[in-house]
Image (cartoon, rainbow, N blue to C red; front, side, top):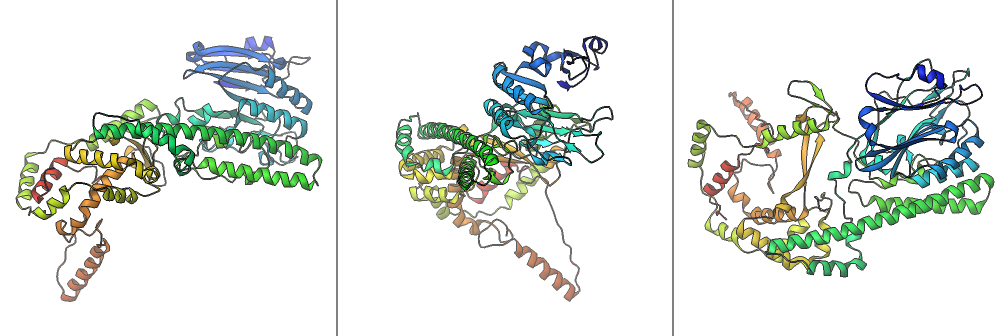
Length: 597
């Protein structure tokens, strides 16, 4: 979509310049107004394939506002093209008109030449005056009603490379006068999807530079999970409900019963999280409305001590609510709202969206070296790469022969005494130690349940955990849901690359899986020194990988002292943990003497 303001074309000149763009575009022109028909003027150009999605369109305020309602991802999205008046009085009337006459839409994206700034940082040179007084009051009513904010300050939108900081320069003034009066405003539909925003270098034909917005069609939250924070788990008012929900769970087996109970409790907690989020959002909204009113009063009575104290109290309340709400997001940090400036636009409604990592996979290389930005094709490239990497290859004859040689030389180290200890039934104490062994800051999986729940409700769940874990241990079967995880790709270095091998896959697994894995590890740990050779110094308690470093220095010193030849061989296996041959590993364990169970 291309939105144009102030084209200065009357109806006759529009007919001469109707099709300005190459390709399949449809145009909605609004002629210029004024006595000579050369003031203002709007146009929305839309790609032909979106024409069937347009549900409504229209013009408001004498040709200064143009809207279009488009159906996107099953939601009715409103797009607004605005050319605001230069005068304060005219803009106040426009904000009032938009407040009353905009058609109903589920979400809004508003762009255009607003002819005013909200923050001193949006202007360089000239007057630093910002929107204030009666205009500020009407403007805040507008953005509060539609819950929109300047996308320039939303964390999920990255700045485009080489983006300018200001969109307009006053060429009629000798002194430097730059401002950012051309802006995009949008709500949570766009925040959740994220994208890019920027100001592109313009031409000498206009004193305005084009602004550009690119947002993703699919929401980033489609595969995200809600984090259940500790203060929700520890809420005494919820414990009776949790007890009832847990005890109502049934299943055909101990594992199935535990899985159903965890799912029910997880859904209950997530419902509470959403209620708390909504509550904090409402309270923040009310607090910011109060702050806006107090700021207006302070302009009229700048020396009032009472208003100053009330401003400080409201800022403290907003900071507190912001910190509480940040606890809902695993990687969110409590924002210091009150230090972000003296305007509503820079931070308004940013608290509604969790802070996201701005690093995104924008493009990937194909096998022939060319680059693609198509989402489906990039998904196929990633899937093909990891299928090739993680799939077991058919072993060659030489590999099979080498296996047999290694196995023939393998010495049994797991004695009958160790086997009896490994196979003994689990105890509640062991499981509790495994739970405590899972770090408190470990990221949860799809269900959002962290370690805190298992510790807080230990008396309730201990018996069910013990029965399910023992059943898994005896049968060797784990519920499929517990083995599912969210795979995140993070760059290996500081530079984002367009090659798949430059991204490291991290899988976020459910806490119940981590507890069971920790339980098995703790049971095996006391016997590892008897099983693992002394040369393996890494990842072993009471051993240090630095032992190998010291050994290297001692050997080189000895060789130099005795004038002996010394050969040093350093081996590094690419994707070593991803290339493990599980058939070989299982065969090796059996030959070391591990029981088949």
